[in-house]
Structure formats: structure tokens, C-alpha cells
Image (cartoon, rainbow, N blue to C red; front, side, top):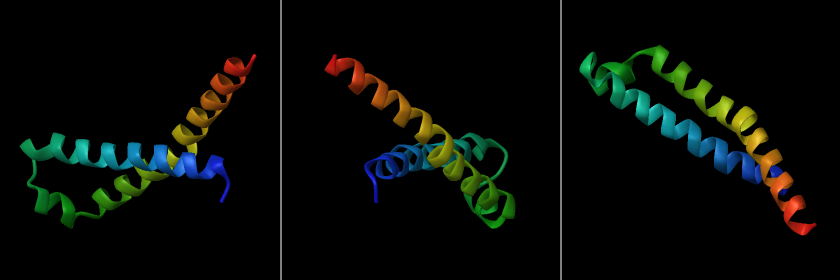
Length: 74
């Protein structure tokens, strides 16, 4: 696996999991955790956050990392 994909999985996966936990805690006033986990919407949203984190956020953060490294070498 290339360094780019390792970086994207690490950064994007972390962001996705963080967002799932944050949104679950944010909705505690309306629904309990067990109610949230029993709904299909929770899993769709969780997969969406993780996929968006890996492919979108991970890609753009990789591009910024490469840009920073290239400017540091000059």
C-alpha cells in the first residue's frame, strides 16, 4: 500500500470516527445511544462520514502535506 493511501486511511478514518462519536453524543438529548444504534440511519451516516473522511479529507490533507514538504525542501 502506498504512503498516500496509508496517510488517507489514517487521517480520514480518524476524522470519520471522530464525527460519528461527536454526532452520537450531540444527539443524546433527543435519543439514547441504544436508540441511535438500532436505527439504519446511524450506520448510513457512519459509513458516509468515514468514506468522505478517507476520500475527500484524506486526499486534500495529503495534497497539503506534499505541498508543505516540497516547500520545505526548497
